Every structure is written in structure tokens, then in C-alpha cells.
Image 1: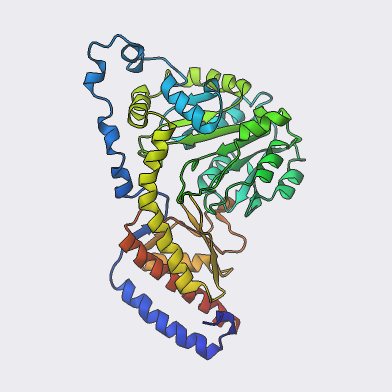
Image 2: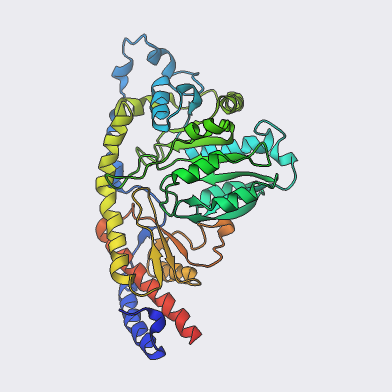
Length: 427
């Protein structure tokens, strides 16, 4: 099939007529299919049901150990030692450089940015430094952008490349002392699926920002979320930072949200000695301690990092066919038309779809009217504004494969219709 741009007006109108009929047929079915956010499907949640029985009253009967005395009581501000060991191993840091908290890494990121705003990250509070800015690799994670926007920061988009953020741009932007930080999803980035290259990680670690209180939010959400046997490898950021003496520049976050239960997992952060002490000082006022029983439940269920990796193979068995379904449909329905491109990631939770510039909002609207819920067009850019109106984040995880097949077929029809409408308007 030739590229759509080569079609005559008559050929475009003829193809549109065919697609309109297909679209109307699907619309008449009253479908309600959700591809909007990276939610685990029911089948994925089921593989973690053993967590519900991982600890019982028998664990505490006649138990005079620290478990009995402490895990059900106040205290242990930075988390239980067994859980800290697991996260330390996964993140490649020392146990003392890990804090294990509640169920949400997003909450930890918000809390840390709040700390920087109100009391600083070792210097003057950000709120007292006038107009401040934050770098936002784009397309990126909308909830990251929302945190910075909530505090009135200026969001500066930085183009994502196949190797990570455009580091030439980043290195130029950090010469401005009002630039206080950058968001990063370094492995299987949301939504592109890109893993930062060795060179990118090295350049990030070597940076010398004009602002000595510059902080990188290193959101390592998909650290072991591989879809293949040969998943991407990401350098341990703190190992590289140590070579330059820049350990204070990064705060790393992760969680089990897409390993166990999104609403009842365990989140953790890793940081330098200096940053850990500042965070602990704030936490000592904020809380007496997080849910240690949930932390212990996860330890009992997974036991160690190898146990988590084994568990992730169960997720992969469910997720990989869903990603393959979407990519195969794109290749079959869109590959020769010159109107779309997409990622085929080795892990993570998203596929990034670029449609014909100027049509993403129209594709989103057509899908919505046909009962297909997508993340809103523009959400992957600061302020919800995609300058080219072309990117859509596709989340294959939630629907069953049969529903996903239908949803993707409809999405492809919508991509074609929006492109034809644009081309006809240009004729």
C-alpha cells in the first residue's frame, strides 16, 4: 500500500468512505475499552494474591522477636531491615542509603519536592529563590509534570532521544541557576520505553549545574519490568555519581506498584548519606512510621530480589502477548502509510505512538466517541501541550487480549481517518 500523501483526492475520499463504515459499525456496538493508564489487568493482580495470606496471626503467636515487638508497633522510621535489604540489592546501594515507606513512590516524589520548596535541599528554600524551573524530558510522565506545575515552577521540555534526554540541551539549560532539577524515568521511560544509554547516564552524573541545589528525580519505576529474556541494562546511577563526587544530585525512587498491588505495594527511595539525613529529619515530624506489616508481608512473599525476578516472569507471561498484539496491529494496519510510527519496547508499561502531526487530538476524540479510552493527547508534554500534536501514550496492560485486539483495530481506523481529514483539508 502506498503512502497516504501520494493518494489523489478521489482516492482519499474513497478510502474514507470505507473507513467511515467500519468506524460506524464499531461505534454501534457501544464498546467501553480502556487503554488509558498503565494499570495491571485482573490477571496480573491475581498472581499476587498470595500476598493476602503471607502473614497471619500465627506469625506473632509466642513470638518474642523484634517482629512481635516492633513490626506491629510504632517506630522503625526508615522501614524494616529485611525490606531495606531487598531494595538496596535491587538499586545497587547500601542498606543505610535506603528508606522504605508506604505504597506510593509518587507520594515520595511529591514529598521530596515539597521539602525542597519549603526548607530547601541543603540551601535556601526553593520558594524563596524567585522564579524557578524544572527540566522535563518529553514525551514524559504527566504526573511528574503536575508536581512541578503545582508549585508554580516553569516546566522546560527537553526532547527525548533513543538514548535518553537530549544531553546537549540539558547541559546548556543547567547553566541557568534558576533551573533546579530534572525528572527522569531512566529505564523503559514512560511513554517511549527508552532506557538511558551508558553515555547518557555518564553525562548526567558528570553534570555541574549552576544551581548547587539542583536535584534529579530518578524515578526507576520499571527497574525489573522486562518483556523479553534480553531486557535493557541500566547503569547504577550512584556508582557513576561517585566517580564525580556528585552523589547528592540524585534522589532515586521505586516501588512494587506494578510488581504486587498498585494500591497496596511498597515504595522506597535511595539517596546519599547527606540527603538521607535531611529526608529523615523531615519524616520524623511527618510520620511515626509507615506500614511495617505490609513491608513484612512483601518480604515473606518474595523473600529476596531473586524471588521478585521470578515473580516478574509471571507478569511478563501475561504482558508480552498484549504488547505484541498492539505492535502487530500497528505493523499490519499502519506500517506502509507514512502516517504513524511507534516504539516496540523491551519492557515497561507503554507504547509511544506518533501519528501525523496535527492529528493526535482528533485521533483521541474519534476513539473516545467509539468507546475507546486513551490518555489525553498532549498529556505526555508539560502543560498538556504537544507542540506537534502527534504523540499518544498507549497502555496495553489493562484489557484482556481479545478486547485489546478490538481496541487497537479501532485506534488504527481513527489514525487513518484523522490523517485523511488533514490531507483532504490540504488538497
